[in-house]
Length: 443
Image (cartoon, rainbow, N blue to C red; front, side, top):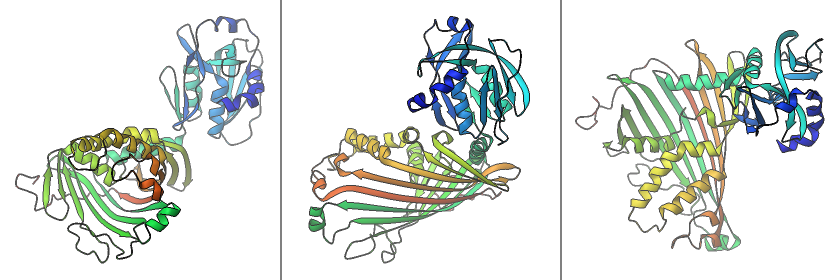
């Protein structure tokens, strides 16, 4: 917001109108509000409380409208707004009292609103304040979705609101099917000393996953059946693959298929050695979310949302807010930290160190996501999701232990590049529980 102040001081002055009513509004201590457009915070302006109403500077709302492609102009006591895409032509309505504002929307005189004039503490300029309730009405008349909590305005453009609805519909769908792939490349970036010391050793690792999932209802309970086929490869000298316990085809890097079946609060996992019921369903579900990202991305974590519509298909691109992601993943992180605190191995990493490492990893991640929304059975549905994640983790941020305290001599950082491509369908397909679940299972 500060970078706007010098260049827009003049605009704030234009909005100001000399009036004795302004002085009465400046006696109370300002309260800070928030103006959010499509999850992006546009401004945190100071508010004015008067006669049970909350007022905010209209100039900041004009900037939010501009970000949404809606032009507006101010002339005298008249605010002219155009959402048609045509250049706005400033007009002036005659005989408007100094304590009111006339609002013209798309050429039609829509509203006459009470106003205050006071100094904006951020710009130190006199500017026009309008009531949050009136601004909510103006924004709604422009076709925007608005949530007014009495201090802040949460605003959505129609296309972005469609994305939120589609994500909610995907979560609520009685039946859904997922198919997707995920690839991950881990690179150990070596120092000159490391290039000599570690010559011939593994310096990169590639992993891929083919994933399928099906959700529905079994015996009146929500059920999910998931299959993950992972594969690993590296750049080591002796083999292009890394076999794990139970590997059935180490020559191709193919690993055992991981299956998970969830019904109600019960969870069963099959990692190639038969189904095992997990007694800690909540922890397993958290681990599942980290293994298989599905349409559980929280809409509130999206930032910089852009939409492109073609026919009945809308494509969205966005970035993920790491603070919001950290909040969403906190149950997983808590489970990992708790497991580390009870672990008796000799890794030497304390729970606090692990928590710090996880925090560093999240802060260094940069994620972009793309969604495709189409009408399915009469409602907007999420039909595809692509995600890209990049991270460069300095080794100096890794907790020092007996096994890692010399890592910075050979490795400067660890880089990660991950991609995920998922498609969704919503067919009425019956889920059948695995036939070989342990006795007393979901059948």
